[in-house]
Each structure stands twice: as structure tokens, then as C-alpha cells.
Image 1 (cartoon, rainbow, N blue to C red):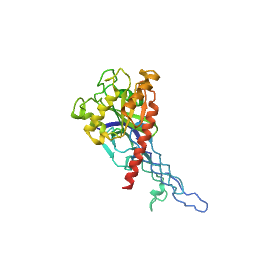
Image 2 (image 1 turned 90 degrees about the vertical axis):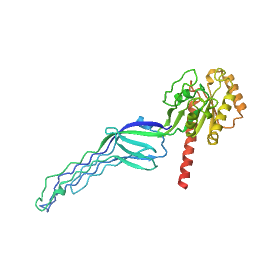
Image 3 (image 1 turned 180 degrees about the vertical axis):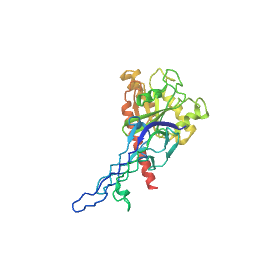
Image 4 (image 1 turned 120 degrees about the vertical axis):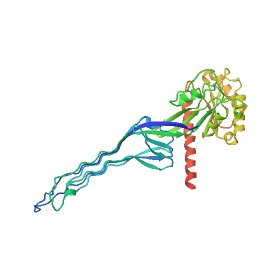
Length: 347
């Protein structure tokens, strides 16, 4: 399944500058003639695919974009300055649709691909343009044409950067609520999540990643039990797995180590590629135990698993440790993107 991120923006290309009516007025030149210059063209709006972006989250804060107007002409046949084109970076895979007409304008599928979505206005003509053998002193100039205005629907078909896996009720939905603006259903019974939920985690401007809250896994999933194969296919499309573990003695089977082992077995049954994917251990629900008991419980789980990879201790409900986790995820994803970019450049 591909997830869809959407945004609506308004784009306004610049108007063309007006031409002017002007006549040459210099000493000793009694019949100077017309010298009005043309206006400048208005700036256009251009979208460009940027592989460093992977969400449309920034368009939730800035929804209107306007290019520069062209300047009007001047005497001495001076042409007005053209407006600068406005280039807007969007993620690779963005589909652009005109909201009013429903027409699909383009689909940016390659890094660096550009598409003009709003044409700048054409410049007006100065009176010099209308001089002829029969009209030596034209008093005519034209105005620049308006730039195009459009409301655009942007759609991005996403693959999640981060997938959350764990037993039902491990706290996956709570974590995605804590880190993003997604609002999946949360309750104290298994299988609250029946469909993948998507959350865009924004660290700062132009730094964000996509997290998928996947339905909880049960034993036999690789053979199709529960949400089974559908669940595992979602996970195979992510770049990083967070294995969420409920450390409280009140949830699941009461044996977190055994729960982790069961999920690892299902990953291995499904594919070696999925089993070998980068996976971090996230020990959740610290708030349900006192500090000493929580620390002892975490150490017991880590020792029982003989876990050698990254470990994070959090309370998703209280947002304890979630900020550090989101920054570490962002750093990891940026390194993966940079490595992928370098490999493509070498090819």
C-alpha cells in the first residue's frame, strides 16, 4: 500500500509590466520621435522535484506563492525589468492537479524534473513599437497581461521511512500520536489499529520523515494469521523498523523477551531481507513503573534479548524520551538519503 500526503496551494504568476508612451526631448533635436520602452515579463511559478524532501508538511504552513511582477518600461527605449521566476521545491513523486478543472498538470518522478504551473504575464509594448512611415508619433502603448492564478492540489504517494512493529497494545499508536499530528484510534484492547496510519514527523523546516503505525502482529502472521501478510508487506517498504516493547507487567503475555522473539521469527519466515533490516528497540510505558523498577525491567529485557543495537527508553503517553528518539531517527534517515544519493551519482 502506498500512502498519500496532500496539500493545497495557491500560485500567482507575476503580471507583465506596462509599455510606456514617451518622446525623445533633447536640445537641437526638434523631432526626436517616440522612445517609449516595453515592460518586463512577469515571473512564472515553477515546481522542481527535490530528492531531499519526502513530505508536503511545509505546505501546511505556507499555502500562497506569488512570483515577481514585471516592471513598466521607460523612456529612451528602456525595457522594464522582468520578474524573477519563483521555483518551489517539492518531493519526488508529487502529482500536481488543477483544483478548478481537475486537470492533472504533471507528475514529478525524477530528481531535478521541473514543470511550469503558472505562466507569467507577457510584457506590454511601448509606443516605439507602433512607429511607422505613416505614423511618426504614435500615442499608443499596451498594458502587460496578467499572470496566471491557480489553485493546485499536490499529492505525494509515500513510502514510510519508519515502520513501527510490536505486539498488539505495545503503544505504537500512542507513539505516533506523540511524534506527529496523526490521530490513530487508541484503546486498552488489542488490534485497535486495523489499517496502517501515517504520521509526518516534522523536526524543523525541510526536515521531516514519514512514520507508519502498522497493525499489531501475532504469531503465525507470515502464514496469514491475523492481519498477517498484509502487515508484513507494509513493513518491507520502510527504511527503519522500531520494535516497540511494552515493559509493564500488566500488558501482553507478561514476557517481553518472548514477545520480541515471536515477532523476529515471523520476520524471518517472511523474508531474509525484512529480518535483516535496521531495527531499533524501543522500551515503552516507563510511566507505569517507578524509576528503579523501570530501569531493572529494561535491563532485564536487553540482557534477555542480548540486544546489541540502539535502545531507547520512553513513555509515549507522557512524551518522555520521544524528542530524543525523533531526532535520532531524523539523523539516521538523512545519512541513508545521503548515502543513496552518493551511490546514484557514482553510477
